Amino acid sequence: MKKQLVHIKGTKDGLVLRLDDQCSYTELLEELGKKVTDGHLDGKIDVQLHIGKRYCTPEQKEQLIEAVEKHQKYRVKNIQSDVLTVEESLEQVKSSHFETFVGIVRSGQVLRATGDLLILGDVNPNGRVEAGGNVHIAGKLKGIVHAGANGNEEAIVFASHFEPTHVLIANFVEVMTNESNYILDHMHQVFAYISEDGTISYDRIQELRNIRPNLSTFKGGS
Image (cartoon, rainbow, N blue to C red):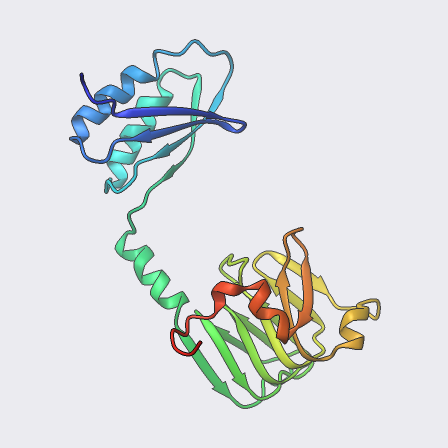
């Protein structure tokens, strides 16, 4: 019995096509073209292509998209791969890098980091801090802070004294006001994060381990 190279699964968002990553690319492309002609569906259907551990060049990805979309009823929404390109790998290395700044971020100054950022000092009003990862401030935060600037919604902002004017995490923004009662009552040892309901929330640093359990990478101890 011939091995099936294309597996189709229906979801509420359309179709997921899982493509075999062990066969030859030519065989895969041929079977993909046959598979998309088998169905009898009306209207445009969104399709996600999962290519597994197969590395495809940009040209080959275009060919896969063309094979699906040439029948007009399908529209490829994205291609998901388990393989990182060199550029993506380098970007991950950059984003996991930890940088330390010692001093004061003054009014009008902008401090940027590609990964996590530790500030041993204060961020004054109208000072701005941006990081691709987490922001840790061992001092007073009274300015603007942006963690997860590259879209990382798991990023957090921590400050010994938490009194910012603006908090940004990934694409979420919160302008701090007098109505931010939790912050008014808990200015010390507070961190900000994106909660499950998709809003910027705040809690004591003691709760960080429960809210972001994967943040700790330390292997020792008990």
